[in-house]
Amino acid sequence: MDVIALDDPTDAEVRRWHAVLAAAHAADLCDEPAPDPEETAARLRAPGRRLWGAVDGDVMVGVAELRLPGGPGADRPAEIDIRVLPDRRRRGIGTRLLTAAAEGLRADGRSSVIAQVMAGTPAIPFLESHGFRCVLTLRGLLLRMDDVPADRLERLVASGPPGYRLVRWRGTAPDEHALALARAKHAMADMSAYEGLPWDADRVREMAELVAKRGDDLYTVAAVHGDEIAGFTEVVVSGETPERAAQYDTAVVPEHRGRRIGIWVKAAMLQWLRRERPEVREIETDNSGDNVHMLAVNEELGFRRQRESREYQAFAADLPSL
Ligand SMILES: CC(C)(COP(=O)(O)OP(=O)(O)OC[C@H]1O[C@@H](n2cnc3c(N)ncnc32)[C@H](O)[C@@H]1OP(=O)(O)O)[C@@H](O)C(=O)NCCC(=O)NCCS
Image (cartoon, rainbow, N blue to C red; front, side, top):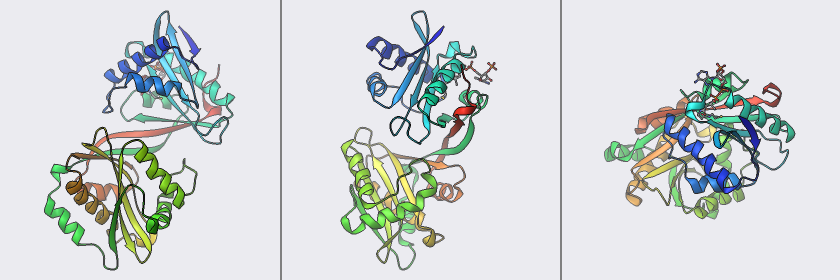
């Protein structure tokens, strides 16, 4: 068995890579859609990543992808994804792939790497045995629109705090709200440790344009106090699979917390979507495991707990070397 760099993969190598992803997907507990061959090919050929394959004769038995966001040597953690064929596990293949990727990490001058994995899978003991530490737990939640009684939404929407009003828009924020929305997005600063960039009106518009370019629809509901946005929530309805929408950011600015603004804007969003996009059957969201307030709001609205994913991080110096 050899581990080889595959930085410019041939069509055959891309196909063998995809076969490893498909076999791992079929074997592992996972509620993500099966990997698509074309998407896999496009991703493997996109810039900003390094690839290694573990090959045994003609068979690819494991793969490692190291994403290097922000260009060569950027001061940001890299992201690693390793998959080994289910019937070839516990023979050191994952470790050899990680060792090769660790050399790539150091060669790029990065000091750390992160991995997103599902709780309860072999990835957890694997990463923990190699110097990774859990830095974030995300609880997946799912709301079925049919489970939310219309009269409950009506009551919640009618019980907004005095002095605040609701506004809403589809797509890019209207000029009158763009700057206020950027300010409110700072309320989520604790969640965006890896994003680094400050929010301003241009970045708010760029994010909305990006969603539109993908063919998806961004819906925003905000609570306004004077000319400030006190809290807001965003949902994206995918052009391809509108039946399952995705919750994006929700935040309440610190000085406006404790007035049930979070649940107010979310209830107004559900009511709006129910009327405007009846094809939306479910909304999925992730909550940081320690964000007890947002978890409580979501559970009160009817979101049910699904999978738990975790983010692990390791420093280059702690990873295995050749
Ligand atoms: C996680 C994964 C890559 C590990 O690959 P692997 O080739 O089996 O890993 P290794 O044989 O190198 O394991 C190294 C060590 O990790 C730990 N480990 C790995 N799998 C484990 C398991 N199922 N249970 C307990 N410990 C485990 C052990 O300490 C192991 O050493 P040991 O076998 O001497 O006890 C593989 O299980 C996989 O592809 N999982 C699905 C995809 C995934 O979640 N990838 C993680 C993204 S980074």
